Length: 82
Image 1 (cartoon, rainbow, N blue to C red):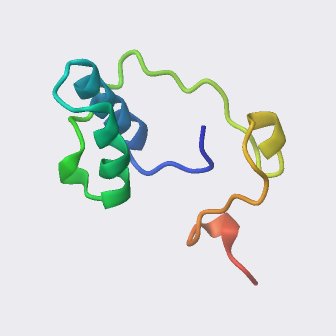
Image 2: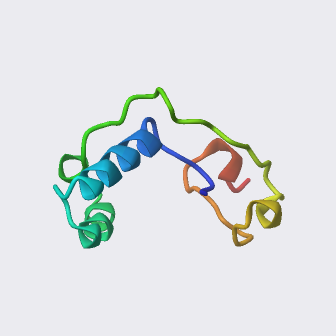
Image 3: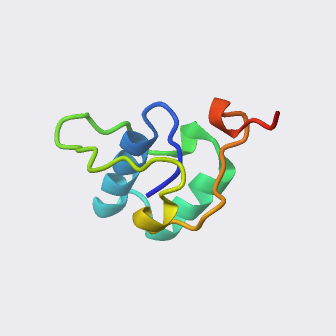
């Protein structure tokens, strides 16, 4: 669940978790990889086959998605102050 995703972000995370499952990375490494914000540390990009977008929620539907309210993505067109 999230309020925004970068290009291929879900596929990169999925590929990294596959590496964890294969024992190529420790589960504890995932948090460090995300905090480093360095794509080179993450696993391969998983193929799109088999990944499914389950549901999209609109702004204001954070509670329905199980997300805290007030989430924002600085720089996004819908998150600009007038």
